[in-house]
Image (spheres, rainbow, N blue to C red):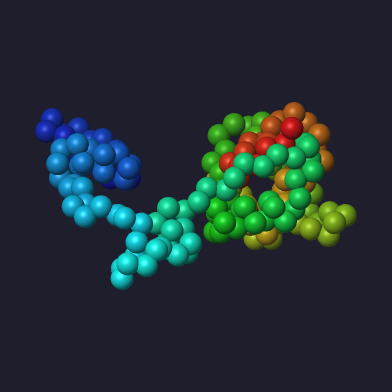
Length: 162
């Protein structure tokens, strides 16, 4: 986020994307004179690795029956998209209660618990290794609020449960 001061003295916040769009429109950012022909330096085609760096691929949408998404897929997607943990800001009490219920079970019958995730004043960061435990506990909760949270989290990972 960039904070820009206007002529009247007020401040507005702009994301990097918005800042670039304004810069292009105003002529501050010039388009590349030499078009990208899909070739790396030396006239060789880009490798898949170079293409992923330039344009990271979004994970394809996949669907599973409700509650059956394989743990391996969840782990893979979380580690790819949020290697430092899955962050959430919780603003309503119902959702916070569902999270607290899932987390406060301690070590469960699967011998799993939360030791690397953080939960502090509405700020949650689920460690990638603990996301499968969190989503399993939301499923086992059985409440509509827990199932909704599970579905919402999976949708951000491009996983649909129907």
